[in-house]
Length: 318
Image (cartoon, rainbow, N blue to C red; front, side):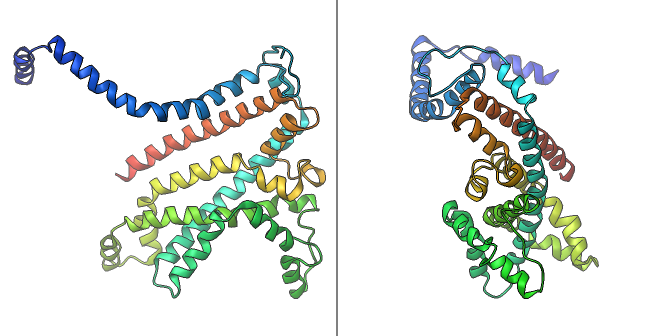
């Protein structure tokens, strides 16, 4: 009651803005938006407009080689994809790649971050060695790994030979194409996730772990009940970013096995299938745009689910 009375008194005592004051306020706000206008233009031209245009193209029988009229086909491109076995195979390959590579990258990056935050010798060197693949151009790193995957002179088969094991046709055997790409992309992207986890570990007060040890907690109990819960926000960020990048995976597959997906199309991801449809010999740009929309919907759905899980986990920790 008293708060309502105070609010009414304050509102009655507040004088309305004059026309000159309103004009000055609008002018100040307009100047602020004027400074933001270049960023809005860049985002609109290079991000928002292409995204909307891709969805529009997916509703047409679009061919970028045809400069004539592009007939409207509605959802025909989507119906074609749902009835195409190659689409389902590429979707299955992509999902399998995401399911294996994302948890693997998450676990390894967390373990390496904890190790690099400890007092090991040569810590600066190991940090640089782990992060450098992430900033190295992919064409250069894939060239190195193509030699490592070589059947006769590759490093990996050389190690297997020393162990008296049978050589593996890494990029020729359909059973080993996807594991080979997972091995490479995990090595390539690991450094970024390690840096994120290291930043999260830096923000955790050492006094919490010291207090737990005084109470008799062991290293595993400290990690399980203190470190891991406090790393939940960083974990969700790493999980979200790695999931998005895994669904968009194109370059390693293209550089390792080519646009056809390799033997038995075992390396054909959604990105590679999109490239084959949109920029292949038939140049079905509308179908490629429909694949882009489907990838966006998949990533958007997973991102929303992970965001909701992140908020629930953060509130539980608090």
